[in-house]
Length: 424
Ligand SMILES: NC(=O)c1ccc[n+]([C@@H]2O[C@H](COP(=O)([O-])OP(=O)(O)OC[C@H]3O[C@@H](n4cnc5c(N)ncnc54)[C@H](O)[C@@H]3O)[C@@H](O)[C@H]2O)c1
Image 1 (cartoon, protein in one colour):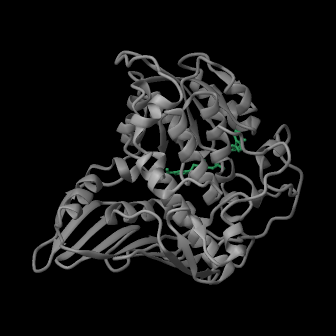
Image 2 (cartoon, helix red, strand yellow):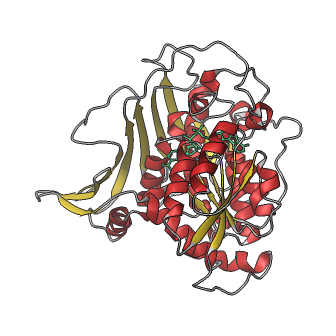
């Protein structure tokens, strides 16, 4: 585990220090277009490609990498209609191109930090999809590497670029609803059961070994593969690391807190009877000195509940603030609800990243990895709590779980030979 203290970790998110550590970068040129690459062109990598393709003032997509030939060929066909692009199976080869300035990492979770660390080592700016890591130790290492290299590392928690949420957090900070002692992060939606799939051969041409990467060697199965890897502990982080990390991040942001001092979690499968390893129902309480953050997840309710969709409710002495798909709404006691503006903004999160990367300005990031790492760690703690079935006490300064070696060991993972983490 990193000996990075939380204080240093948080203060270190300031880029001023970082920029002097690694090297001095070229002076900012507002007309410069970044040469950008996308690593992992599945569902979300394709969303990145579509959004980045429209930002021709800021970047050009010059390369992609994916271990699945069908996916990389499909993406290459669309992207190369504008201009020729380089296509790679192995992202490490892509990163050898010194002309590439920045990358998107949209692989499965178990590859996020390893790819991002390789990219930082190759001196690229990184937009890493959420959750930034597969375990807590990786999240700390990634934040530390961003600080050390002075590169921009934006986290895919795009709520941080939503105008209504930014205004909502300001409103909370200014005491708009008085003292806030509880925030509830709600993730409820219907997620289809996945059934049971037998082991089989991987599709022809797929580099399955590279897809597994740091994860233990397992036979191929359609249910371990594209998208469904979310629901296996080797590769995914369950829905608390998937959609939940958005709500946990917003709740932590609004409360203005970092790592908790204790975590109580319970969860299980009340609905699924299939290949899922991760829970469909999960409740986690994060304890701080003067407030609580509660995460509540149900993957079997697809209708609005208590007037609320996915989002966060902040409870204060003088009313509530709600973050949801419709944006931010403030309700002061005895007053009508007031909308403050729209919510999550994926396009703006990407634009903000490109502008900061162009200007070598990590301090300008809306969703910096120093924050993304903390929210991702909260998701991991929620999973560790469920898996060991005990209350966890944490040292928030060092991010170590106290008096529980088994739980503490779950803050990291064992890396398959040949796929160890690079040292940045
Ligand atoms: N920010 C958001 O709101 C948001 C939304 C959706 C997904 N995501 C995140 O994006 C990530 C990708 O999700 P998805 O739905 O596209 O998953 P996916 O399984 O559809 O796609 C992942 C792609 O990565 C490729 N890949 C795997 N290992 C690779 C490697 N070593 N090198 C190159 N390519 C590799 C796979 O072949 C696949 O094409 C996830 O972590 C997910 O949480 C974020």
